[in-house]
Length: 307
Image 1 (cartoon, one colour):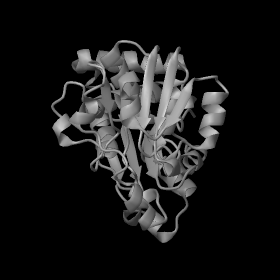
Image 2 (image 1 turned 180 degrees about the vertical axis):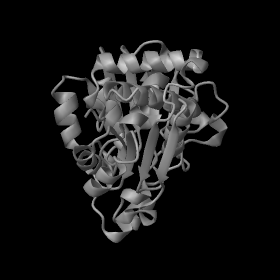
Image 3 (image 1 turned 135 degrees about the vertical axis):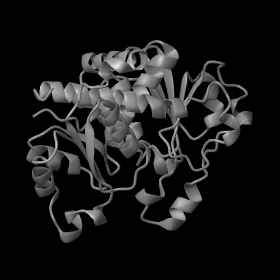
Image 4 (image 1 turned 120 degrees about the horizontal axis):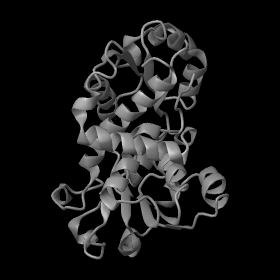
């Protein structure tokens, strides 16, 4: 049974196919209104979420399907000690596809191995968040018109930011992409990401702590929040949380067609004064996420022979 746990589970051809489907959904939504009629998506969210959970649910409803939901660990049998594998087996009896978020890395893989229906990883700890990356890819494509020949700045928490790790994996497969990694020393991209993805594939990148010094080079600026929930030490979080705050002043040397992205939620990494700047694309990402999740649900259900 095909599941999507990591963005690398999808080939470049499949990524392009999903973007094509998403664009078709945007252009002709009525064509897709009944495609998943009588099908059920189970959203199993053992970690807080607003955008991702509602996006999956909106995606399934707009395809004509239904949703059954677990919105917190305390509201499920996980509170009684039930394993992820047993939960996945049980939910497979009720639904046609699962979207799962869990605070533990690898939980989605455990669920996928146990389930008899497709599982979509909606975020597992600091590890992967492939459908956020699908939203990011569609945003880049719709804003830039192409996927290669781009310089991408990733700024903020690059150590624990699962969206950053997934985006590096995805964009590294397109031609002539360069990365500028902007973070405090304590929150640099993990060495395994640099070694296994960037260095292995000879992807050019630089590391810096200075956002303003590199902003003029960037085609994409992907801001991230410093995630309080990933820290073991409150003092470290408080010291690092305001490392980068994007303001209009800092954009003075940026390109006129810079695409400013953020996986959200933001705390104060991007000033609200930037929201009206035509380069601000983070709320477009939210909408694009729904369309890409619709495309992915369709793909997996078709491959499973369910629709």
